Length: 299
Ligand SMILES: Nc1nc(=O)c2c([nH]1)NC[C@@H]1CN(c3ccc(C(=O)N[C@@H](CCC(=O)O)C(=O)O)cc3)C=[N+]21
Image (cartoon, rainbow, N blue to C red; front, side, top):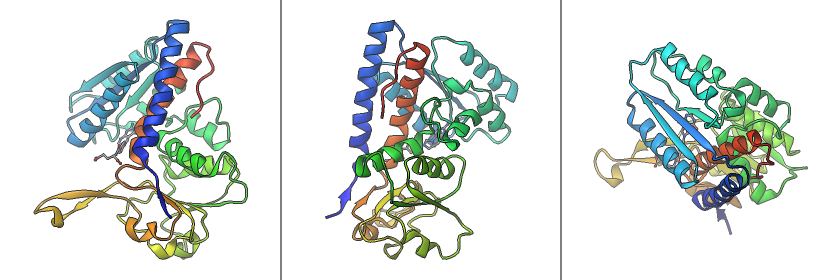
């Protein structure tokens, strides 16, 4: 039987841990975890994500602050807001929603966030800690951190002897995901668009992670029988079967056919997506615990 991972349920269990750690931290130290989310412009999809994050932060018991800046915000104005949040002791986590409007450079903004408040895990210091296998002192990027929760709940902490293949090599996901799997002792291949015979490489994977951004690219004959398949793709595609002009979300994995071969698989929606938001909350309580000199919870 194939297990379809319920990402919403796993995310809910992460959120429960965050809630109780938030209560304990406040009761014992008086420190209330604080998350600031910054959004620039009026892209509707970005606004939907940001409201979901702010709402979840409130549910966790955090101080939740949202800064909505107009489309015409300048680089200097955005940098000034980040500097203000860096200096604000009530804020433990800062997230600047990406992508930024075209006239703004995201890289200098992200690198100006204090690493200890970089709950997105995108600062070079946090990326470097992951790359060097130091998973104790930094903040780990939310989507790979969430995917690793699925991997740990399926295979345990130690992946010795298992082959993992990550399709995708972005700084946002593929590279940190490969580093996390390697730190857990898996034998890791990072595959990408230039990889020769990608299906054959994938068939070698006990753990196959797809993050390419191509709808339903991974087919059943790419999957090793009994493998764990984690789908990180979020692609909006036309769904004429649901009515004219309608769309739906699909992953990078052809779910129905791959589910017949895999032993564990994540769906889209309802897989990795909800975990990304849950791990943002996890990073915020981790950051808050550290500033208060408390040991953060494990996820
Ligand atoms: N600084 C920054 N950090 C991010 O982490 C970040 C970002 N910018 N920009 C945009 C992407 C995208 N992202 C998602 C989070 C949750 C779902 C999610 O919960 N998806 C639901 C479906 C939601 C729907 O129906 O649209 C699911 O997969 O079940 C998806 C995507 C975070 N991102």
